[in-house]
Length: 77
Image (tube, rainbow, N blue to C red; front, side, top):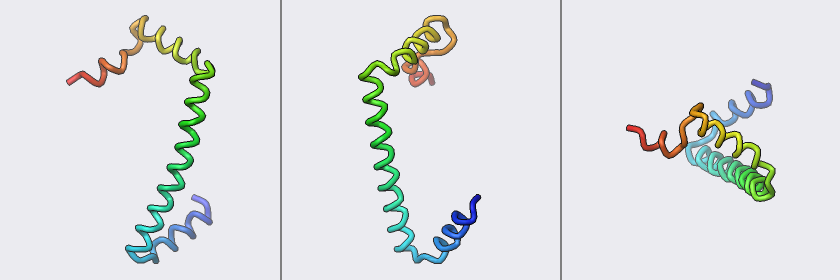
């Protein structure tokens, strides 16, 4: 772990419960923005055909019995 992360963690330990809650709420909001950007990029790549080769590979794996379709895995007891 980097020295700056260690310093931040030590500072977090000194925060009041209210301050910690505010910190984690703000961190979560920043992470959500990053996730939104990532999801938008995946959607763009998918609709542009960039991911078609992955879908074809997945379908080949399912058809050849190397993996199960997700709906079979989710529905297993």
